[in-house]
Length: 333
Image (tube, rainbow, N blue to C red):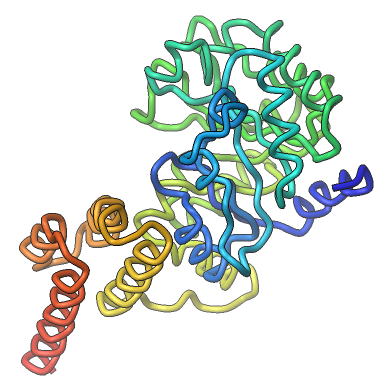
């Protein structure tokens, strides 16, 4: 992609309102494709190891693949070595991505142990070297994902944001929790507001947005440029549609259990086609848990879906679910 493309992502941010967060094990091509259809303005891949990208592993290559017709897409890279980051970014820049996101926010132990993710927020000099080197090395726009800091005593998101901006990042994704919190507790949206006041590049808010009301509140409280949704989309991918409908003055559509079953089966078929029967069956188990959470009478069906070992078993369970729903509807009128 030529250097003229660097204006594309700021324009994408201007036109966007809500996007899908990168989530390891979840934001693969099938799920991204569905979220894009439903209303996500753009998506970001699962985290990709810079070391793995340089080594050219098959798993890493598959994470970078897109389904035909996918919308705008960023690739998120993590690691700790500036030279490896640069080589990985150059490889990514040769693929069909719209931007590169540098992960300085992941709290997972296996990433932290290698000095990646939010561990880098304890060494802002290293963050500066990585960000500056990658920006200089590629023509694709570069964004940065950060947290509030390592813990409450090492809160440094303002300094990190200013470094990202000065290093040439075009936007900052802010998840307002400390590394010590992981994904527990409540995201402190006031941190996003303070970061927005401190930098002039777009700030993308991420954390605890699970409804249209949450979206409206986080935008109002922080002044963020757009909102990134992760776990809220796992519970209901329709959150993107609902937000867009509200912004257009429409009443959000109702979501019935039959809608969830239809979308689950569609995602199941896409995962099988994308990854093969064995891996597709395994990958879907986590989606069943999210999609059917809180749905009355689904416990036994969810258990059966989680242990199914053949594609036909799953499709038969879906058929039984539909029959159960139809029977219940007839009984209740």
